[in-house]
Image 1 (cartoon, rainbow, N blue to C red):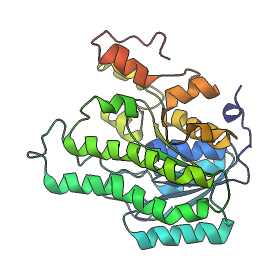
Image 2 (image 1 turned 135 degrees about the vertical axis):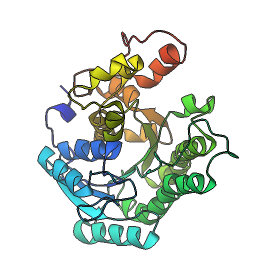
Image 3 (image 1 turned 45 degrees about the vertical axis):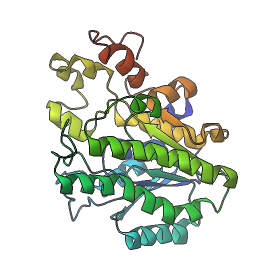
Image 4 (image 1 turned 180 degrees about the vertical axis):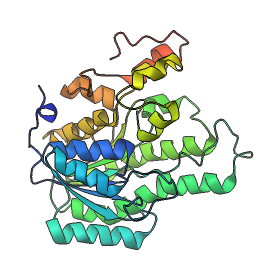
Length: 310
């Protein structure tokens, strides 16, 4: 059984920042790193004392507590990643308390309620579209600008740019709307550019996408929980390929623990792809490969059948 699934502590002593770790993939990544012994700083705008514009109940304090319960040390720090001064204060705190940063995960998003499905650029609400781009792109750029000098202080650092879709999948497809498409493609390009800038300096940057993620918001949309998520298949059969946030969390933990992680520098990766390389599984013991499934089954108009894909 892989280290990520038997409680190994091969990331003990490592320090990670999961920017945007309140819920969904960010929470899964934070907990996955904690399960292998890392100290994980969890940042975001949703705190026990103040909700973000989402109005969701999840908080960074809850995520930090889950990290600690998993075997690491979780530290919650409120920060709006659109405000450079707040990101500077966050990174200064990590430096003062730990003196190092080994893993940076840029998972800031916040655009689910801002994009309009298949709405043209001239029909789409302009303020919402521009806000989406700021949340998806500016936040990542600001965080990398501020945090990378600390990460580069030691060789072997890892930057993970979280997005939706692999470079290969997104290249030939229109993704939801002009603004959404641009946001997710921009993050893929960030990882490529960071790979060129970090590689010669001893660090690695990758883009990583989960598959069809059973985030808290997705489960709520289907009216199910993680315990009974398969009940949603009667309504949307292709949801059978979905994965829990723990799956992409184990993917990031595997990358962070890999002494040869530089082989992935500048690449676009998926949780399902990495599961085949590193041997980890989702919570149910399966290995869903969503992006291959989307191409070969869902987009091809075939009936839902995950045989050979999980």
